[in-house]
View (cartoon, rainbow, N blue to C red):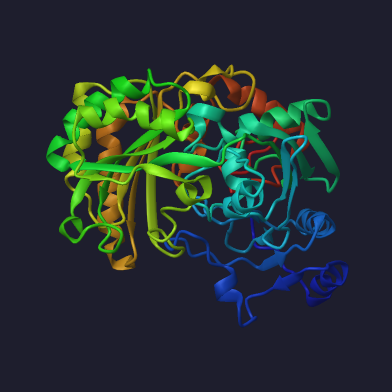
Length: 469
């Protein structure tokens, strides 16, 4: 589509309707405003609208539609492919819509679309509650939730979408609706895993879980022990009780406290544990884990749930270069493990890593037709990420990530966690990710966004449009 011409008068008219602020390329803070979490993404939108409230979102959606502007939606800006921003687009920036409201008697929390999971943890922990989310507290609530939501509490509490009760949504035609089990249930179904394809979610209401303290943290092992640890882990975690979660990782030890100096910058493997059992019971549960093999580093112990959730924030600040590849995995064969070890030994930078997140337990007991998330029978969501502060190393981290993915993809279940997809993987990967649910999603897209206004995402194209942008 050609870039539409916007005259100053139309922009001034939009400004007059807003409580928030419009940022344009001529503004001094434009370059800062267009940055997203992934420093590899450099897009130049036409307008960035910092929406103060739902009325601003409605006005912005209407303006983009009426002026045939490409529209992008940004909450936390963590999307792997940088899909919260686009060239020549109007960006709806939800960051100012940041509020939390905990109802301890109903065990719910309602949060604004601009919140991060750190905001939610801060609000809910004061009442002794938690919502299952990811592993980095600076991640936006909106993007993580709409893609599914995998993290430390997945095996105990299910995916984030399994705990979503209701959503406030601005649709492509500018209408405001609620989506829940009783109101617009088809839209509610699609929002739970279907990404940002169906509207702008301005508020989420979640079910709370009585989780305060966690018995968790990392256990690290020598890289020479990786195959043995992975084989033990693959058998252990699929039979573990729901209240025990642990994801496997290849990593390089950061050269800073609290890590001991003898491990600084050493390539290792590890499991990052999260147990929600009472602390005395958790200590008993970890006796056989520690008996399996003495780790080189054992940082597992009691800590507040938000502390575990934010543990990796300092290692991964905004602005690093990121390149991702991912798959769902049913089984970890010995041959697959051998390939993992081969690439784990070749981590191209200190920040690069591979994670195997378990998605069994409570998450597996939701039927695949109950939400848009299709891979309820997979055991892991696998992701390999090349990460580095220096753009000059991009070729190296991208090459390692792609080669690693190509070596392991034959052992995968087919699709991938939609939040781990990059923007260059194509429509076939999106279809594979949604599998049997894809055509149902297309029908819902036809109903709520037939012109594909919301297409800066892992796009589910409506049946009546041929747009590819």
